[in-house]
Image 1 (cartoon, rainbow, N blue to C red):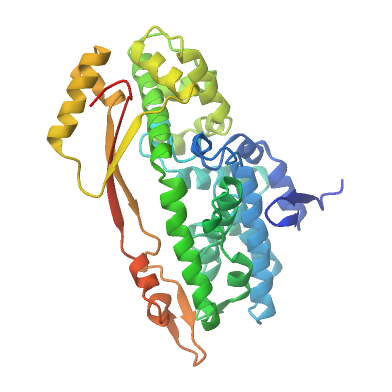
Image 2: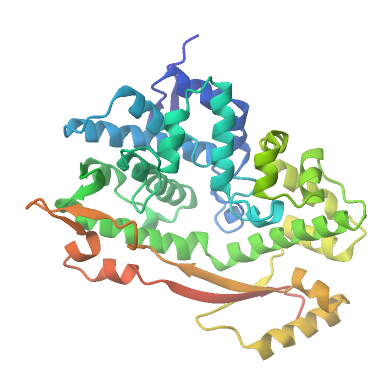
Length: 409
């Protein structure tokens, strides 16, 4: 069978699959599931074009990785064929552990189980399925391979994951401020002392990349309406879980019901592979199907939340640079209780408060290093003659509260 397939990608054009093993991994049901998980969760509620999937992103990141490895080889960095293929596998599978709605439901489906943990465990299952041929890819993914720059290409301040998702999310949302010069940045990559570095002439491209990242967080990932929508879906699933575990009848697909009825931890996944196999069939469609059924549920809170999401009647959001006044929150809580006739314990489903943060460049421990013409390695924040990069390392925190618009305040 001809496995040298080509994908026509709207962002990069034609993407080739360079080896048979990569093709077989893409064909595997675990990877095909990513077609059914949207890259940006509920961002389509704000940007209607944001309908791309984790499948798109994984292929795009693999394409950028191939370009980066070819660039490094052209600069006399020795990369053998096994390392080349393993790096492509590692970036291809870096997000395979994402559940429905990507980050939005990470805490609702499981108890303290992050997608990175699940990605590694699914890679282990795939490694068994492919006769141990993913061992090196897993070492690169976890950072245990002795040549560390491969791991940096997969996960760091300047990895192929970030370069793809900024370009791709910018393209699909239409927020063009997020578009970065990924090609130029990749062409400027090199390796020095086993660390990934960028050439000095790439400083301004890096600055543009970091500025774009901060803008994308405020305009897309942390957009106030996206925060409202994602929190509403989170509370809807949490309410469904609570009702189901209290013995109420809550319709759901067998796969979703299994996770809602259980309080699974990372140890459960590690002890029982069948749980991971169940997870590998869970996707956005399970949750949307549940929400559609819950809209007519007898529980008023669950039906209100589900109906509101389906009809895009999203909660009002207030965002503040300072912690929101406790008296103000108490006032909203009392109005919610009065209007919806709910108990103080149930208010948490209809009034949601929290904190968001935006940190475009976190230099500590994983800086972006510039290789100067004199041969020195310098943090990009110190190498630039512009103050922006250092400023972008400052974490900005904001506080929010969401509540139904039916509550006048």
